[in-house]
Image 1 (tube, rainbow, N blue to C red):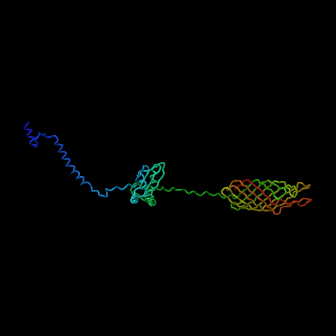
Image 2: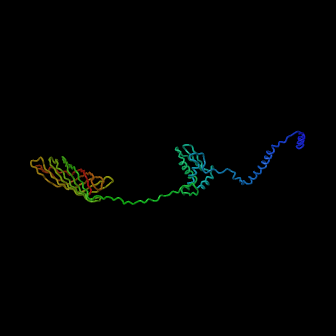
Image 3: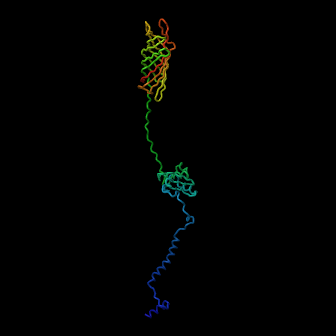
Amino acid sequence: MEQNDSTREARFGYRLGVRANWHQQPCVIAGILLAMAVPAYAADEAQEAPAVSPSETATSPPDPVAGVSLCPLPNAVWQELVTLVPPEHLVSRLRGSKTASVQIEDTGAMFRVSVLDKTREYRDEARDCARRAKVAALFAALIVDPTALLSGPSCDQPPCAPTPTLAPPVPVEAKPPAAIQPNPFVRLELGPALVTGLEVEESATHWGGSLRLALGRGRIVPVVGVTALWPAQTRIGGLRLWQWRLPVDLGVRATLTGAWIALYGELGLVLAVLSERALDLATSKSRTGMELGGRASLGARLARPAGFTPFVSLQAELFPDPPSVSALPQGVAGQTPRVWIGVCAGVSWGI
């Protein structure tokens, strides 16, 4: 044992007794090899990595649509924007601005869009994100490139707006125009009439019936009429008379037809048969005379071309030289009325 210890001291050059730690030698060798391999691996990586230019180390350009917004999302606005403006136009126009992007900001019930120093706020309390994206994209397109909206730019890469397809024309069957019903050639008017004479001491009111006939389809047509009146009492020159009349007229009618009402007027001549008999004389005889004068009338009816329709009319008759009434022994007591007025209402029938 002593010889072995002295031998080890001579090998390591130590005067004191030192034991060699042989079980640590493999760890030391592995550490040395690892230290030598790391620099070599780094050198190989440096040789394989491409050279980076100073311009590429600068900050990457911002996104065309950016901002802190959840409704709408910037990406959704971009998807709508490229359907309106070509991407290359959009990027080139935004490159010269301060932010170089379209800024979207969501403030809750409102959202704000900023592009090229132009800002617009929109209110959307319903928070319809799809609609917000469309509105924001439209505003940005109007600011960036309004001519693109008019020219309809094409898009080579999706997403693009789908080309609208026009539905084929639907053939429309031509319908013949509705036949216009012509005016009737014959029109009859029948109704009760009330006629009274003026300019006498006691006017006589005659009730009766009137029948009129108009022929033709034009606006101006001939018309003929007859009115049968019941006898009535009157007083002329102090004499109480029993009076009866039968007027017959011939003239023309002009009609103006509206949407609902047809108005017409008549002018013509009237010939009346007049019979009178004194009631207070001891000997009384009936005398019959003739009256010749002019007649005018205004009327209205419903504007119905054919069939039955109600009507109403006003008339006036003027006699310049009415018959005289005389009695013995006093002679001429007076004249019959110069003016007769009347009204008639009934049914008009177009045939």
